[in-house]
Image (cartoon, rainbow, N blue to C red; front, side, top):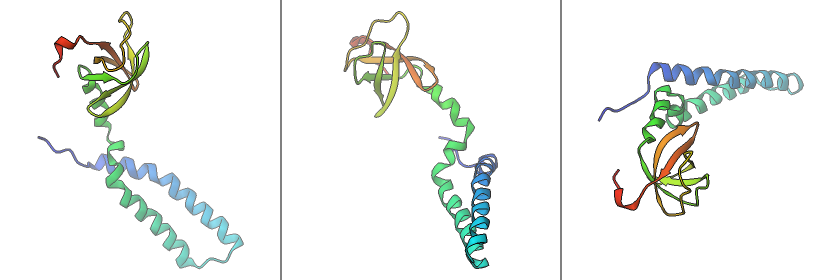
Length: 139
């Protein structure tokens, strides 16, 4: 199995998204410094802590900056789930322990709570599903 990790592109994208908050912090510190006499070391220390916070958080959030993961949502097509409530035409289903907003495709009958469904497509973050007969359960 291929292990996917950080790339320089992901680190660059994350860094670009952190620059506005750091710039805002600098502006706020400069404004506060006009009214309160803060030592220079405090300003630099606070900015260093801010950058350290971003560096510490990176391993936990880097997947959100990985554009190759956007395509993985389409891997849901064909997956089987279970309706958590009546889908007429929309509701929630559970697939692999995750709760997803789902909508019955046009022309398909409503799906009752507890019935199996199969994902037929995706519209944004809403899964388009169709009820599946209990005899054809394969995943």
